[in-house]
Image (cartoon, rainbow, N blue to C red; front, top):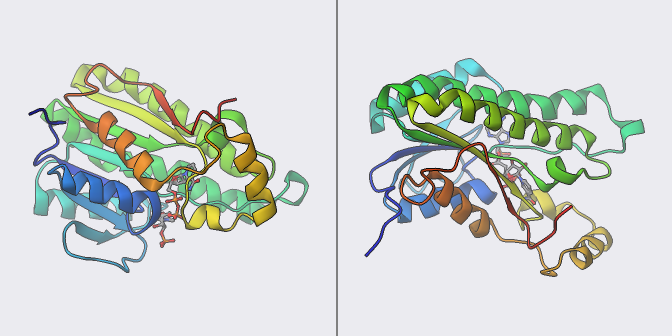
Length: 240
Ligand code: NDP
């Protein structure tokens, strides 16, 4: 019998209330981890994980969440920066409000998520950080200049952190999902969806579970102990 070694590890997932975040929370629970998740509003708490209302755009809010999670569950081993939003528009129509909203959640939010936990991980001399990037950050996407900029930036964050954290036994990686069936992609009009699907060699969108397994691999001190600063693409061969 082999294990990913996540039993009793304390792992925090942002944006865990629905979509990919919820699939990550549920898989980590199944793998025996002690899971905490954050969201602005918790609407679906079944009590299996520690649910904490916190906004990734506020460092103070994430610091308070980190304190509560550490007090209740113990030192944190893994952080999954998953919360993200889109505010799509063609570049000529992109407003400052939509630019700022996406930067605040997807970029500053990743910084605000990792910062309150990282010194605790250094003190334990071990840990794993996983940030959710996107195929849009990897290859760009019309109408998503703001979103793609943040998702490319996330790759810069983990590559830098990988170098900075290695001496403390902490790893940092990103996952770049392709198109995944969640509320985020339900907004795509049918015609556009059909066009995207035709471009994907697997001829379908992925499922949240596909990303959850990739997260579990990158968190695992057994399966990925020599992997850091990497970008794992999970996209049905929908490469650049
Ligand atoms: P969803 O829109 O389904 O879920 C996003 C979650 O993030 C929600 O629970 C949302 O909370 C939460 N959230 C939003 N803003 C904040 C905030 N300020 N603080 C805390 N939580 C917040 O998205 P997905 O599950 O599809 O996406 C998850 C991640 O994967 C995102 O980073 C996304 O960019 C990325 N991704 C998704 C792809 C896809 O095809 N679905 C493809 C590539 C990457 P609330 O319920 O309150 O809105």
